[in-house]
Length: 64
Image (cartoon, rainbow, N blue to C red; front, side, top):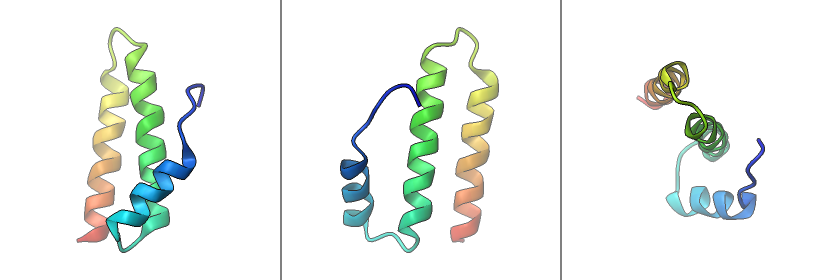
């Protein structure tokens, strides 16, 4: 991850959300932030957008 973000702030956001699985949510947010940064540098981000879609679907299915 070449762009730094505030891990403490991410942890606080997850903590404030009262999510059932905070560590999983935190990991998902970090992965999505990393993928978003990768997309920002690409002219054709299709594969990364597909990966983001898969991650979100998997996360929603696990929580259903």
